[in-house]
Image (cartoon, rainbow, N blue to C red; front, side, top):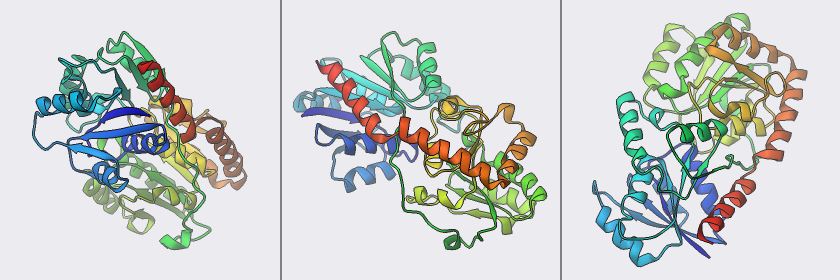
Length: 356
């Protein structure tokens, strides 16, 4: 049994939270994970619910305490995620020799609403960037990003993997009709996800197709701005804001087409989940989407955030045959390339390589 100290903030809601829990659960028969967390949030709640061992720190700089635990526990390796996970998992190693693996799933400077804060945290992260023996990245875009920042050792590309969901809600559960043309997205309501632009796109779509509906699953700091824009466009009766939902994977099936408008993405889990449910996708040309979507084959990639192009491509999926063709290709692509079992197996190989 490999003993891993896994360092992560604890307040995560998105891709990192999903990936960490999926790996911990998928490898629990071969790896003993102990979590080190620093913020209360959805991830810390899930860690406790799933009965993983968890050291949780409330103080600002618990470096000495962490150092003592690491010496006493005799872990085989440390695995870190995100700025806080990297800082608290790398810095306290001044008198301990434990190999470190770090995972990068996003562009760190874009993880924060404050641009200055993002740049500052990235610069601090750079100070310990070359401590890990191996850095795992979730996409080729993140691989290039880590290289450009000056990492000199081994980089492993391990795509995020998902489980296939087969239990779905029906449209009637949300007051939608079978003949509605439903555009959907699952996202955090934050600047980097560009949700206000999606409202602009939908406003144009519904002018051309009257039975259009928009369903957004998620929440965040821009919620009030989204609600305000919906009201300004007078489309309250056409937009459903479902809030954050733990059962989001069960909702995709009510969509006709999934839309991603992000400014940047390391690797979009929501796009993977949509594809796994036979959905066509229309996505912005950002980050790792080109590793999932082939333009014109299983979806459409929109360059330069061209609103008219988004509208045109979304409306193509009025054609049910096109929905079925693209959807079938997407389901196959997920099964062939992006299952959680593969992600777990590849992560275990990294652990074994580091400690051999």
